[in-house]
Image (cartoon, rainbow, N blue to C red; front, side):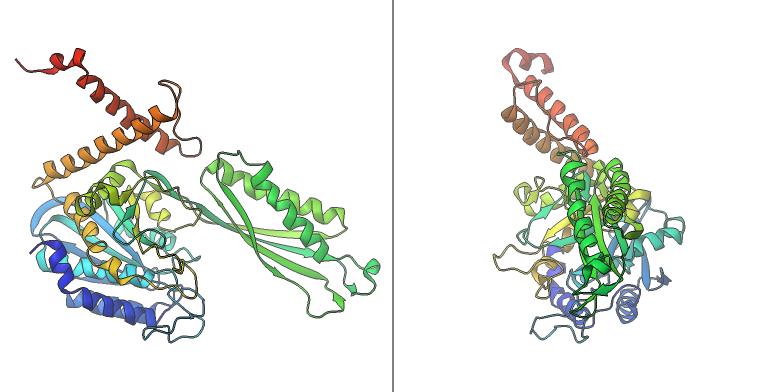
Length: 464
């Protein structure tokens, strides 16, 4: 039975799994019920599992019916967010202050659907490892899995992940080689002054005024310290200080996050925050102490695996529904820790583009169950079929990638020639070096193929 038809047969069950997970959300490293549910289903499919990976994670392994030496990993995140849900539907969160506001319930259901289908058919060569990862939100479950030696115990040639993307129509995908999502760091600044009566500010040193100066100064990191064509974000997201109306507090705390793609930009941000905070506080007689943590690296797709995923999606939904023109996101994803160790790709799945649709991390968000039907699981399965096909089907796999690369080269050549005269264009500036070099190769190939079609060249490549 074709993949899409078979997945459609048990899509209602996948929706039930998803709704159950949504109603019982669990945050980072607390995914015990979720882990039990995943383990129960995987074992019912006949897939052997290891539990307790990175505390609450699960890895299931499946061997194909044909011999083959390749192995890949498919990953889904399982954790929820500390958000109070505002939806009123039947599967809304039953736990106050916790919610699946990022769609990890849907990611888990999709990977379970893929595992079920593959366990039924085993129509592949090699090995597939299903990684159900805890603690993607803020706490770095992927990093802990890597530190525990997951790829030493489960060696793979490539790793794939996906994420639903509100604003992208259901049935569409978005992917690009090179940077896909940004690095994610956090900072905490404690500003200490001298407490006083609010009516007598001259007797104190006001940490709130100092904090205001620090916050304003931090905005210059992106506007005056970062190259205009390189991406960076510095956001203050918390201010904690003071308890009543008539007291200037002794101290307060600022917290925030930074985002970047280029390692040099990332290295610049931390000392810049410290320099600005120290200077602003010193100018007002206050002192500061700073804690800075590097959380997630940038999510960088490797070119070959990107083409595998893009070709798989295009075969199912057509070239026009595989978007290559979306900019990288300043959001972050700890799947990047896997991509630091193994080649792989991370693809966005359309979650719908309604005008009033709730976005990720919104209390009214809900995963679109239509994304787990034909648009969601089959591309994952297609990647598997292509990656672990072994000798059988390998030529079709490469041919599909070659077709996708030729189409991409033609598109890029048209963009380049439209943008500037021949020999004077440049598609992307820093920090997308990998993307720039990769696309230049495709443009050069497309130009050679077009030259071969010109009248003066046609005869040269004809066989006698």
